[in-house]
Every structure is written in C-alpha cells, then in structure tokens.
Image (cartoon, rainbow, N blue to C red; front, side, top):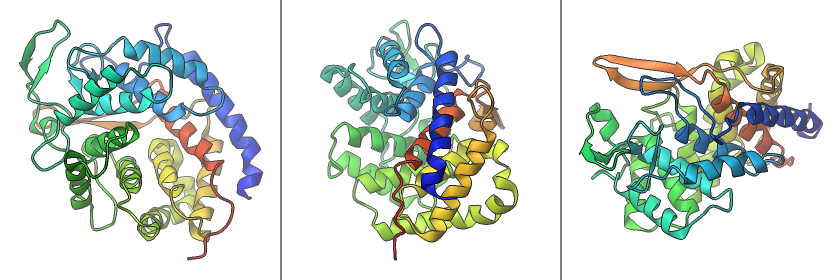
Length: 339
C-alpha cells in the first residue's frame, strides 16, 4: 500500500480523533489527564495537546479555546506548571511557549517573561532543569522546592523541549545560553545514536525532540538524521511485520518514532517502516476516535526509592500524539531518496 492510498483513511482518522478531543475538552477550555498525588494536569497537558494538533484542519476552535484558558493561568514568575497546585516548571512553560505560536494570544511582554523564566532553569552544564530550587506559589509567596535531586537537575528531555521553544520564538542558536544547551544535548547522546529520558519510559519521545531541535539549530546533517532513522527502523522492522509492535501498549512511543522517521529522507527502508506504522495506528484507533493509553509518564522518586509509571487515562495525550504523527505523514515526500 502506498502513501497516497492511505491518505483517505488517515484523513478520516484525523477527523475522528479531533472529534474525541472536542468531547474531552472541559468547559473551561482545558484538557485534563494524568492523575497524580497533586491532582491531574491541565496546564501542561493542554499546552502539549495544542502543540500537537495546531495546524491540523478542524482543530482551530479547540486550539483557540485552550489557548485562551492557558494565557489566563500565567504565574507571576512568568511560567506555567503541571496544574495550579504545583509550582511552575520549565517543561510545562516550554510547551506553552510552543502552543502560543498557534493562536492570536501572543503578547510580547508575556512571551519575553516566559523565555526569561526558561533561562532561569539553565544549569552550569548547559542543560535545563524541570524545577529550580525556589519558586513562587499560587498565593504569591516564595518557598524552597523540596523535590528529588533529579527534578532540580539538567535533563535531556526537558532541555530538548526548551531548545525548541526558544528557537521557535526567535532565539538564535548562536546565543551562548542556547548554544550551551545544544552542546549539552549533543554531549548526552547515547552510543546507539538515540537519547534517554528522565520523565519518560523509552527513548522515542526525547529522541524526536532532540533530533528536531538539533535539526532546526543546523547541528545535524541529512546523513545524521538518516542514521537516527535507520536505528529506529531497524529496531521496529521485525516487530512491525510480526506483531505490529504490540501497538496497543506502545502507541505514544510508536507515534514519536514515526515523527522522527518523518524527519528523515525517504529511503526504501524508512518508507516501508512508516507505512507499516501508519497501518498499525489506523487499525488501533478506538470507536470514539481516541487511541488506547498505556503507562508512559515516569514520576521518579515520587516517594523515597519509588518511581511511578502512570498512564493518560483520559487518552488525550496519546491521541494528540498519534494525530500529529499521522497528519505529518500526509506531507511526507513520495519520492524515494537515493543515498
């Protein structure tokens, strides 16, 4: 089956997926998912979803409504957080900054303060931490954040999302702070050519963000991207053909693998893997338009010695990721790249 032949089925799946997100969106404009001790997330989840569905035909009103809600939640520090009960953090704010490009709610002062907020989380090694040691609370007071060290340390997944947010808002990759972050990402690349994540199980989420950020910063060649795609395709190929990658348990990560493959030149191996993934995603879409959730988010050291692994039980997070992946598939070049 060709890319062109799959297009009508992809369009129908996108329409059903957006309908599901429309139903799931709360009356206050937020999407809510990932139940944790301090409650479910609305700010971070909504920013993530906006960033993944913006630009898809039919998403305009969903995006506008959620963006309006998000802009009203900006904290005095200039950032956003997991939810209103939790201190603002770098990762949530990075996703909000990406989301803000999707609508008419960009205000230069608000954007600049959010960018400054991100830089306030940069560590000496160039990476960005999720939280800083001190943070404002909803009541306006400032207190020390009592969290595990990893929450206050540089993380590749947070740094990659932050690099993208800074680049899309016009920060130069030659700026020292941003260049230091880019070098941090490059330095922390695994021997496999991928990256590992602190907050997420597996490597596909962070590898996509790192690849995208380095590509936009002109730090990766076509050959580099092809090499990353080849690793992903090799890891997936045998599983795709035999068991469709146990996709009910892996939709979030498979969608991110697909997004990385779609950044690469169209080789025969990559193309065949992409088509098999798309077929699998289309097959597993649920009747309500969503895709099945699975435990994907790590909460390291949620209690001493304990790391939790939780799912987006509302399926909004996974669904928006699958929607982004299959929508970008439609723009993939049909011509085979000759290496």
